[in-house]
Image 1 (cartoon, rainbow, N blue to C red):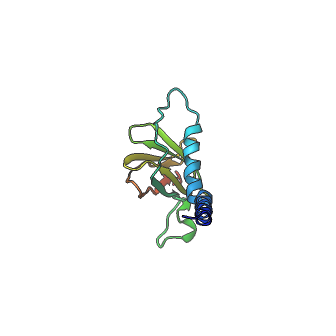
Image 2 (cartoon, rainbow, N blue to C red; image 1 turned 60 degrees about the vertical axis):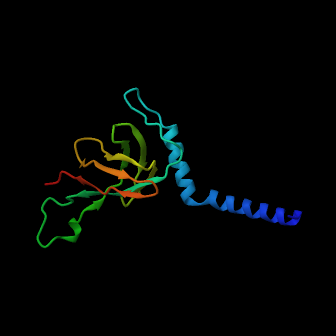
Length: 156
């Protein structure tokens, strides 16, 4: 192989590496890995050591309902369930904290985790209400597990 061809192939490889490095998918994965590695814990937290190769994903949205004191028939659109922006805690099903991620304004979240494991997904709340359910999901390698969570507002 001549020198010009080797140089051209080297440049192509370098450009491809830069494109992959700058992709949002790679950035999000690296962000989730470093946030999990840099998180602080108390002595009561069990921390699960997860390989840096996070090859599964958990996503979903958190919803708050009811939003009006009396639900009507037919349903009032103003009283429809609303997005609930919060922080979602991801734990290995045996209790070890794996990740913590904030939802966006629409209550949507997305986090990369190791595939082949079960996880408990719980929104963090302060006080008695809202009361949010915990969802347990199995994340397969190279798959997305959806955990949509409903929170009870306490409005009656």
